[in-house]
Length: 324
Image 1: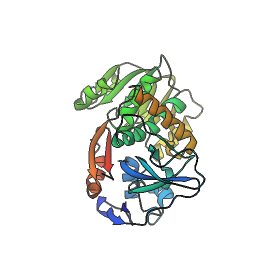
Image 2: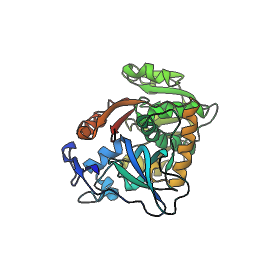
Image 3: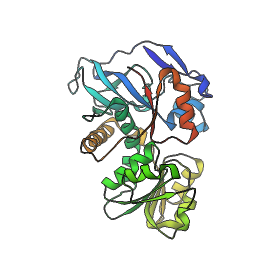
Image 4: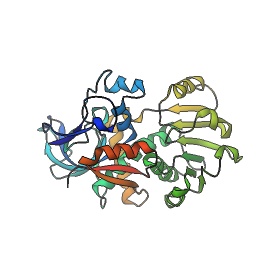
């Protein structure tokens, strides 16, 4: 099968399109023919091997898993001998977790892993985009922010893959949502359901005099120190980007009223993620969730996909189109 591989850390130039062995599913695994996969900030971080502590997961000197990619969608084309939950021909969306491997024509996933039937009526690219954004945004908001009816939530970076999902999910959870994005994305944030939209190039949300129950920094561009003055008592600052400063703030604020929280949502168990994918599918079919896709790239354009993600300008997900 064809796959995107990397054998050393570095620029997008280290990525290569190669022929590798097609995997065979184990007894309790299914094999998915991948039609679309998300290219994420995690992929670009792992490819660079920077920050250095990311190598604790990927390999200190060189990558130990040569194929990147986590969230994907496709069709099951083989099942292990003991599989009972899925069948050949099922259209699924899934996340491969720490094993990665989704930037390839085939990937195997445990039937009890992070896999669910795709929402009816969605394309593979749309399903992969929903998996990317929602599997991060949902646990942050629901489990760590404890977002619920009547709360005020600010989403910083509301037009990215995670941010666009967060706006919609926060509304689903009953919150009043303020979205922060650039001027060119204001209309998108409103379309996704934000109650208020702030163009950060024109207005500093920390100087408005408003306070929030939860501030979700979906792009890691703000900080707890900056946001703390506009958090309500017992307010929470959530961030997706691990830094030493954030880790220290988590420890320092652990027993304080206002807290900083960083969560490694990708490390959740497969069954937990599968339940969330089922919820995402139901919400999408009900029209309460819509995918946002920035652009689509072929396997041969993988370098361009990584550069687009690293530009910080993408709107929604960058999607790798694997199979025709």
